[in-house]
View 1: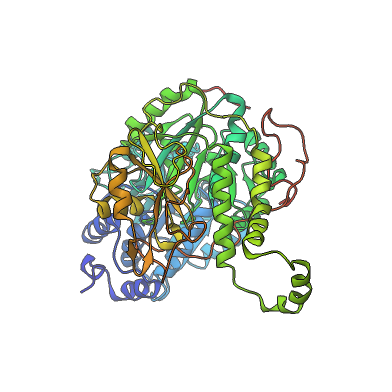
View 2: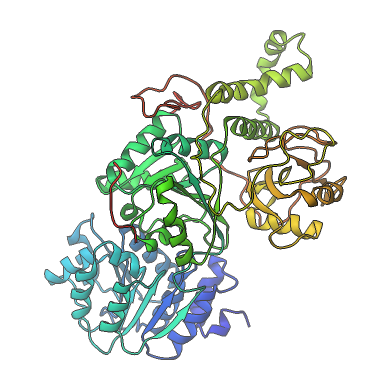
Length: 617
């Protein structure tokens, strides 16, 4: 008996589960499905986005529906068109072996006549956004007066978006004896009000701590001057060449401005906000899902319902008014068991807000420094070297090689390598040469560790005090993220839980910190150390603040030094990072000067694709 069979699901659903490749139920599914199948009850389920909530209510709902009746028996309310369509698609996949079950999506931006026609044909399950649902009820195009089940998905998001009155009106037109299932990431006062008014002695399940953030997300904050937010954002992007991110702004105006600035500066960026038409929104989201957009700049309302599992970073360009909103933002990454990073760019006056968020989500932030120019140059150099090394040779170039060899005649291998990597290095070096320190003074409140010690260590010199930064030649491609790499280093050397910190994983190399007293132990352990036949090199970083890579011994190039096959430790990610955008070209920034220190970008010229005062919390 599989774990899904043990939950009480019927064979047709188990066959669909097998087709979809599900093997083990998530925690919310394991807790919710038996309760919903065994009794007619109201349920409040608190779980983060990305934990499998749709299947948790979808499987029981399909199993309980009478497929022989064409009347509407189940209603699922969701906050956005995107989420509505996603739920509908999943429900249709779940019920593929069920005869005569029809699931219809109702949402704004599409023909209300066509949707009414689909319902008239018979829709046992309706998935709807509150606004369009209320409109159709008022026009008497849909009848929910006899439904048996009502699901409120992402309830806190619907209420944050201002749907309280719509939801009350919709629920008031449903029978009292129905079962109501409420799924939410957090339990703010408004959600509790809905539960009290429309639910009867609901059972409650919680996945993780109530209102807490996901444990797979690392939270970081960076303190900068008010005018340095945008250059700080660019540096964070340049330090993570394979970033695939959502950047949150508080207003539509700021969202559009930041996205336009990023596009002008050569980044693959796009904007998502309420002023876009539905067609424009669809184009942006399709490009984002295909990784053609690397940095999606969005307002909180517009980002509701974004369901992309591989987002590596969430960047809070500005903090939201409500802590619950921060929880939803950070929940866009670290989904489906993967890890992610939530970054916050703040000014000194906003530091008190970090403590408030920590208390609410029961997780600590790491105070980090905005990378310096030399650190960015170093990371981009390693990234380029690995990209060259892994590039598949195109045999079509063979016909051009004789002429190219004539051009390069007389240049030896070492000089040729220097020239190739200098193309990338010089671009970033020229841009960041003499760039100012963007880190605000007195920004070290609650800093995880100080970064003194290990400064410009060369050769065999070993630091004796302070925190030490290391370079290691494994990264995401080898199956590591910040959690699994931290565990790997700690377990391999035999260190304590908190002895490895500031873990920063790139595609094919990484950095981490320890205190100086364990440096000798680490370097000795990773001398001639192999994993699955590959040498794993750990060396003291040249740049203790966050760069890496002064070679201690035995390395064979940038992030290299491996002999034999590639390591396969940790959770493996897809090697194809296609479409996220590689930064090439150099030109003057086309557009107005946006800040004093870094008005253009090393990426400029390649691609074109108001702070509001409010009550925080």
